[in-house]
Image (cartoon, rainbow, N blue to C red; front, side, top):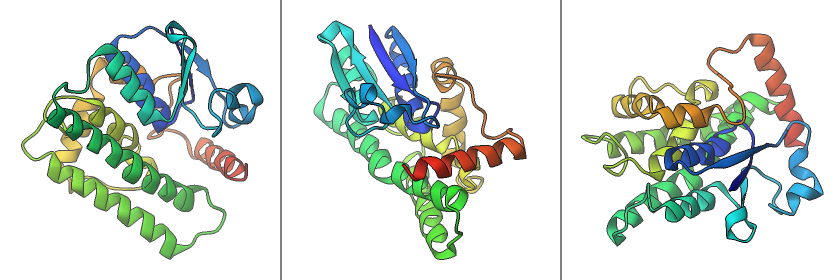
Length: 227
């Protein structure tokens, strides 16, 4: 049994969707990041970096793994799915997984911080991260020309990148001028496993929340930034 320590965030969805796609049984351990659960000694024993998600594989000697990409690779290799067995196909998926982890995740994350959460609005900094995130989206749009999925077949690369791009509205980035990316976003988002994984540990729809709820979430996020 896999124990999944998570919260409703893009990085959390990456692992819950992967588990759903692979059909691996798992038990959800909700981490309330607003309350600081991720900084408690019990969780730091699993992930010393104090970030979600993390897993414990009870069937593998209580193996604890943190970092969403590492978890995804472990689960895919455990199940023998979502990553090709040949070296070329495998490296193709891994490089686009790393593209999300080193590019879209950090850049869009900082765009969220400075555009939505940071108490001071610094236009040059906001422009830097918003423009770089859009540039990375454009790279993916080009990669998706003539393809249903990033590497041809559905894989970890799609799950990882979708987990962040699905909140482009929240970040404030338009994708109407990126038709390949927009079609892919809808295609992946309609998968049953993606819908289920996106609702772990609970459902949250950032595109339809009230202004009051949005303000509350942004204030809570500012508190997290200070920890």
